[in-house]
Image (cartoon, rainbow, N blue to C red; front, side):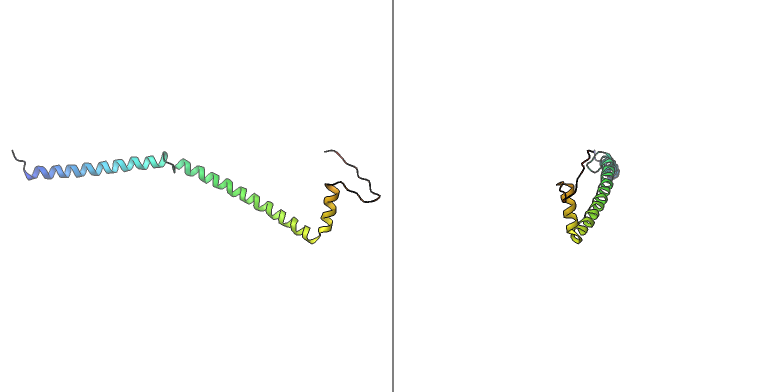
Length: 106
């Protein structure tokens, strides 16, 4: 028996409708997979944002420390003799003639 052309049309409409639903079903699960289980999931994005904030605070801390050291370096360049004497007294425990140094333990 031959099929009528009407039957084929319904089959094609049914197949395209099924294909359409399968496509969106797969896209839905692919989206869920990417949101929760992939390398760039929502959880990973939040971890990266938190790490970025921590790095920003470390950068700010290092910049403040660098500014202090630049100021100290500028003071050393302006008055090197003072800092040479200070270094010799504090770290090498040198003294001038007639001076007595008392060392205290910390």
